[in-house]
Image (cartoon, rainbow, N blue to C red; front, side):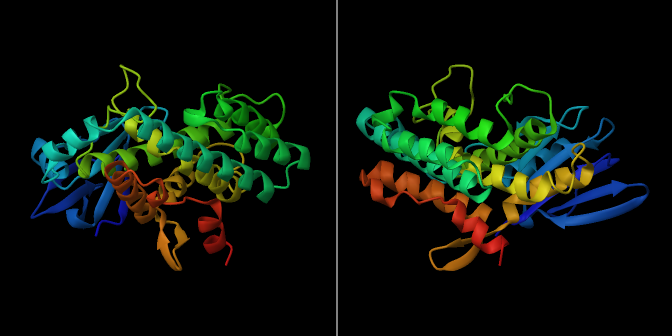
Length: 304
């Protein structure tokens, strides 16, 4: 089972050695079994790696996240076609009905907004704003035809960060969220491709220029969990800018404990179960099979 999310800063050289990732830095060498690795995040402008290693990473379904010179993730490398019945699953995915897609998207948005409301409650937002979010949840229509998600986003972020806050601002809060969402997106992309799904064919997102429409659909309920994690673990401890330690902490979100179905697990495994449950729903047309993602699942574990 993969469980490591590796971050490499200004390493000199990466190579494959006997099914291990070998990292050479400052004259020292470190080895990590590929079978342990889920994602690798690369920072720095002088790092070199071999095509032989890249091929092996793709075969192990390891997502490689590349950061720009401002340490912001800007690209993802991953394998394709590794699932043993990719063609069969692709045909199933293409055959999903529009009605079922709309029902699934409605449930995804309901979960996202419910988690946003839970974040507001956890951080003592105004009762009126919490009630407003509840009202928006109760009035979600099929496929969110009236865009309750968009209305909720304004209420949500203004409640957390002030009435003048927008997601376009250049600030620590947005920097942390953008970085954190990219980590979730990369891992979700890894799961989607490793389970034989077509990442471009979304449930709701259908942008012709987006290679990860389905990924962007499925990650929605996890965004508020990352928001809560940033409010709890990042902003209080790294109040000025996203340091190396803060970025490592954001990547470590995937390893955070989660209380799920009566037992303690981790976020990355919950994400895997979520994608598998989504596949079951789309095959069996039983919406109740979709895993319920809640803020309480992570908050309960991390506060105990």
